[in-house]
Image 1 (cartoon, rainbow, N blue to C red):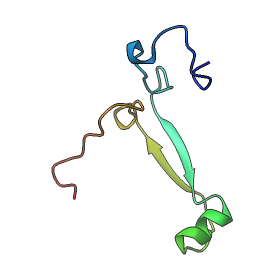
Image 2: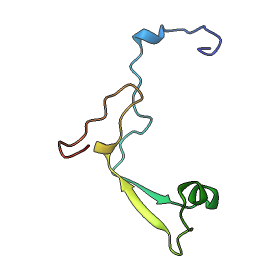
Image 3: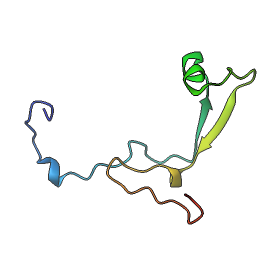
Length: 72
């Protein structure tokens, strides 16, 4: 509906949030596509590159990303 310019509720009245509810953590695998490795100028890793995302790392599409003071 929104793509057609129609909606039931005006978009300005909607609070969009991150589409994840009640999570403790998300475990991710990085560099798992050879094409992405090539784009980054990296060789594909021999072992999986695992990293995590915690609830404090997830923001909604209109939220501010708060950076630590040591960030550039």
